[in-house]
Length: 361
Image (cartoon, rainbow, N blue to C red; front, side):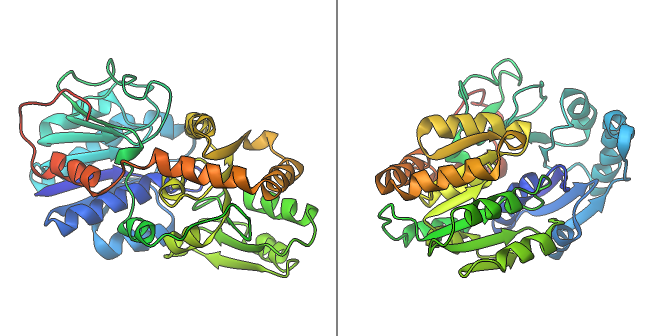
């Protein structure tokens, strides 16, 4: 089976789309599928990770105002590539710039289309729609946006997580709510430099004896500033582009990060978080997870100061029962995310049947 994945990553876009697509690609490859990526932009570190395991085809770069005009050209370039492959079985799309018009252009040249989305702000011509997020009315908000016979895979139970997170959950320690270790991580790029803001918040709290694990992604441009701040702590470790995030999350008692794709990794491991929204697509997740009691949602990043972060950390530090309950709330959100849900996603792709869809599962 031949599968093409159309996704991008950058300092502005973040790396979450590409990382969840990589998780899907590895699972499909293990099942014997041939997977190729089509991309217009990607940080060098992520490019090396993708090209090491899969074919990677580059579309022509476009910048500035051209991005808003690129949909038709993007579709035509993608069609040229899929025609070269010989009508792939699936194209998987994870890109906020792609919608109905693009998909209709590509539709005759592929057998089936899968869309990964979480905005529910545009129509799609797809056979499968995957939205892994918890948001208001998530069960019905795509009903008018996809074909009636499309299969909808909705909610955190379908979050695309790497196998090491399930392995870490199987050996997860019992937390007691006391904060001895904090994981600070804002994804691959952290364009608004929230990592620095969080470290300054910890400085405001003074000596605490809390271990800090500070993780920077491969696209982060503030390495020197973050490194200088880390040197001011007795117990801070700076890590770059890690491959053991599951172990770091399992070890930590609290995280400070964004309510992006790592939300589901943290919740699967029962890790409470103080969350700062970095992008519009994270707002509903932040609100939903805040309502579920799994995070402290501080809101939009430009409204969050180091003082606010310090106050949130202090309040949780002094209330271990609250921290404990937050972790349990995260585990409840992800209680149905398991091997069965993963197999349903793979089965929808690898064992597609033309009849019996048009439902949410």
